[in-house]
Image 1: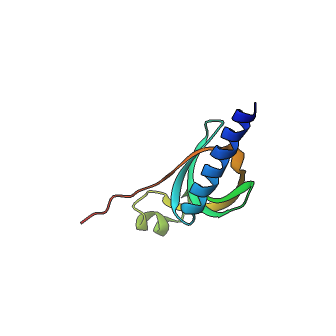
Image 2 (image 1 turned 60 degrees about the horizontal axis):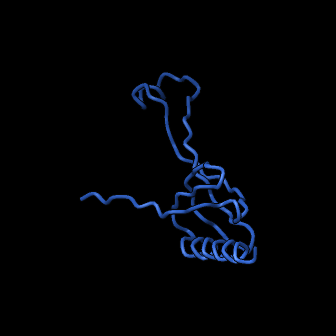
Image 3 (image 1 turned 90 degrees about the vertical axis):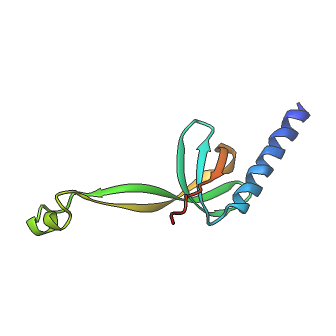
Length: 103
């Protein structure tokens, strides 16, 4: 029983250290319940991680004709980040998102 507790504590410490290492970077997080999301780790303490979680937002607009012509009839899209707090123990994995550079 003590061995399982030590493994759990070591894993929690590893996740804490990884969160600290990846603070302020855009990361991909997977929770133990299988849910996944991307976000920016804002802060980490002993029990919790605070993440700015990315959300895609589509603005349908007010239907103004000039606005539609400017956007070529397509709705505007943008990204919003919302602050969320997660228990560190609920985190399964996290990976740094890498974006390819274009020449």
